Image (tube, rainbow, N blue to C red; front, side, top):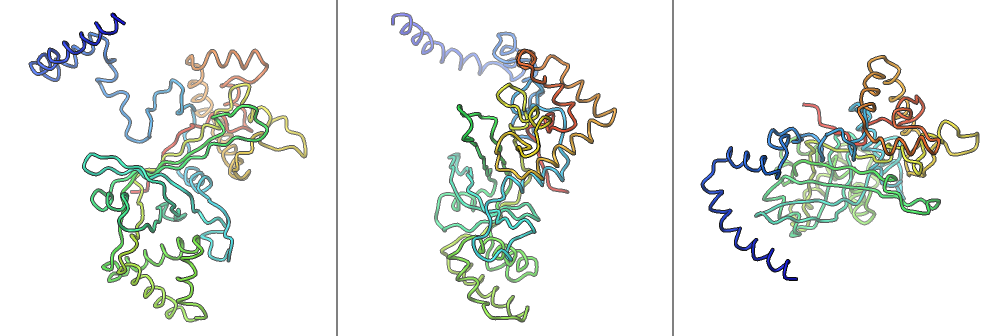
Length: 367
């Protein structure tokens, strides 16, 4: 106890001295002092760890960014849609956005900041599978709507952590997630005065409202029984105008500047995560993929096919070999070898597994 009290006293006495000490030094001198005393590493001061395109740093020392092979934008978009597919329509599936029949409605967490005060809110949004925007209708006066009307910059995240029944212990690597960083566009009655605004609002209501039974009943009733396209559009716009001017709801979309896809299930390295190994030994009638990830096999097959094509080229194979032969995961690879499991490099060079793909990849909208 005496040592703890002495330490606290030393800290109290040291703080004012440090403040005066720091005030007399330039930024460069402070950096040099911090470096020489071991408080930071050189790559921190040079910005080597700074990262503007993912939600975590891209240093290849393992962690969530494990993986040698970057995804194509097409695969990134496919993954986003697959992860955020929501469920099937309980009612008329003809309102589905595409041939999958998914409604793309999910529960998200939206982070906002206003006056230096952070806020995180759960809310339901619908993914626009064409534009990759998130469509939203929220009650006016809530914290998030007050915040993003003042500061439109937001971060929206979604994740799924699975606990398959056959697992005796929860395995973090049965998980995946998506992070949207972007800005909120709030629709107002002024948008009904432009063709672009009308088109966006019609798109939002036609994609968002069918996923919510009560709202859809009111919206659909306005054009029920109509067959003329112009009359239907006019009826829809009349309903939309009432919603915009009523003041009860805020109608908006989140326009992404980047979407980060995180897929730890691709690691497939340890003895307890054997998707890659079991895939190549699966017998007829067994699951192709060992874990029930709630992902369609067609999506997983697309990842496998892309990886196989990548390593089929001399350049691709060389890149993978270079990535995994720099001393990464020697202990884990040693365990895999001990248990007769493929090492990270061996898995990454198997043409019929998805191992080796980066477990974090970032989609950015076309300029």
